[in-house]
Length: 391
Image 1: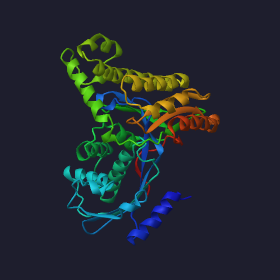
Image 2 (image 1 turned 180 degrees about the horizontal axis):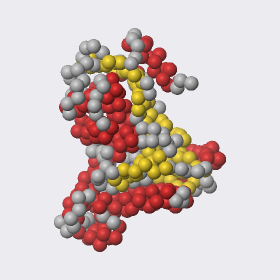
Image 3 (image 1 turned 45 degrees about the horizontal axis):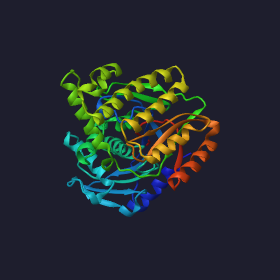
Image 4 (image 1 turned 30 degrees about the vertical axis):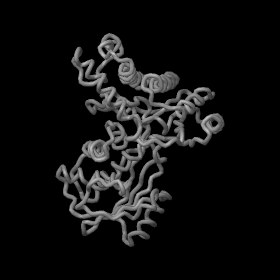
């Protein structure tokens, strides 16, 4: 049976553009199981694509006009722009992601000489830390490759997505989000070395447990959060360590090496930031091993330790995330929980017994609303495929 979302997109496409579409595309959101705030420190991360994502229907045009419409932001559209002007413009809102991807495709030599019409809809909660921006970037990349029959491999599309964040939008993020969205596979997590981009797909078999995504409903914008500051602090700590040891990234250090050389940092805050990066990297390696051994109890414990480190050493959680995670830890049937994403709002994840989900959600919601004053939102996440052409 045809997906209801695609039916709606087809209907909207014909209504807005009065023509027949050519292609249908899908790109997922992602969760990071463990390995938070270390992708820009050369650490290992463990993300997975999820079954919530962004859909698009598009058709190539004969002229240089680009028309974009999103069912999520109907007030902004259809927004019309030209292939001849792809510079960032704040008033273009979400369409800047589209423009950025096209701009960098053309810059590396791909022939895109006509515009297109596109209708988009995403069911990823916006601003929740499930990477709706990387989802959109990879969606546009996959769409351009298909519509214009371009010879570009998936890794290059992933790198263009990151470039859009870093250079076009000025968000200092690592490559994890785009990589997870671009390389994800159903029921598998990606064990990724962010320094070398070597990766392995690891079966993510959670037995009778599901991943519960808990949205604090406190909005956070990546560029405005503490993200860039934390990144700068890690870079500063690395520079101080490099005066004594020959390393290119914090991800190269074992816990033992860090403890031996940390006195060179000589700043309590910077030491804590670097400690998180090093120890989180150790936790990721352990998580992959225990998951291979089907030791979900140990996996849950590592999730808890990750949150504590993000709270105490990285100072990136905030009252909403700490409240929702703390409430999760108190529930029978929860193996582990932690914040995920940029922090200071957004989402946490918990590994919970499938048969206890409703009770767990009810209990967390009650405690969260009482303390924070408004409700959280909850979603069950399944691990799904990466960005792809649907038709």
